[in-house]
Length: 109
Length: 114
Image (cartoon, rainbow over all chains, first blue to last red; front, side, top):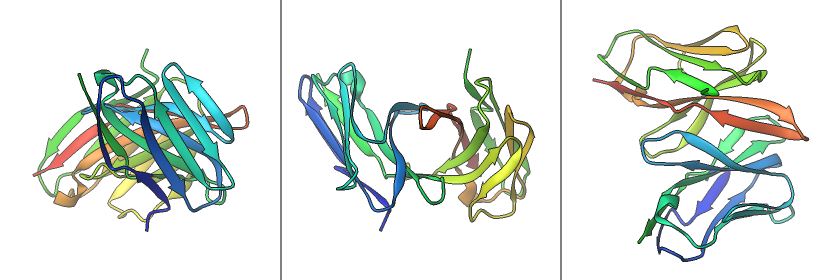
């Protein structure tokens, strides 16, 4: 079992819908990252969280350290949001970044 | 100005060849990494260097050898390439700031071994 689990694995939505992607982890962490990878493209860091909530434009990321769970929300989704969203945690013990398997999001017009 | 740049972007080569992928960062970060993304898009750490010193060396075949001539460069040399080495390789750098590490990734090198 992977130390970082994401759900769902695949997600399709109509433009304008509210999107939620979930991430659960089983290791002690110093931070959690949400990353975005467009098809054929590089990886962009969206958020780094160690507690609470962060917002950037239409994207909101939350983390609950006690429950070892984080969510990434996209409000008013748009086709350009179509990408793979990856949750990654920095392990407190090993200092390594451990990745989830990613959530493939497709937003249709 | 590209923050973390990798070359080449695409690399097609035959089994048994030796190849290198180069990575440079102009962010002044102390730590650099190599990650491998397999065909299922799963990312995994391979190596980490801090100020030219090897910090993390995952269970990677010793055909893979990282080299860091200075803290702005981390190159990956692969000997005797095998079909299973086909993947996308990402370089990244990080810096400790505001209580934690922020990461910047390169655009990836798609290696195809035929």
